Length: 71
Image 1 (cartoon, rainbow, N blue to C red):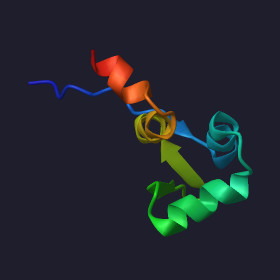
Image 2 (tube, one colour):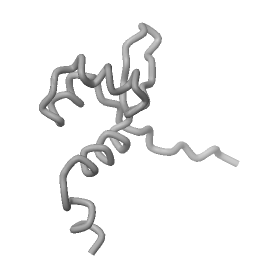
Image 3 (cartoon, helix red, strand yellow):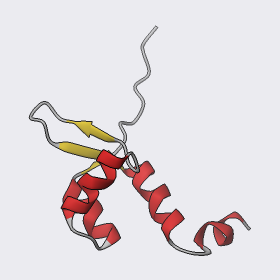
Image 4 (cartoon, one colour):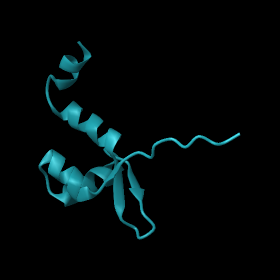
């Protein structure tokens, strides 16, 4: 029986996340250290962030956005 591979989740760089929130990449690093976002470390030690988690956080930051999408 062949194992089914799930689509790998898109990972974003700190610069990509910072661009989405319109903040400095260092701010994204501080959020990760504070536990606001979970970071995945690459073999080279760089941080990457799950796109789904970032989008959830972004929706939470926009007032009224989540309520409107649930209707």
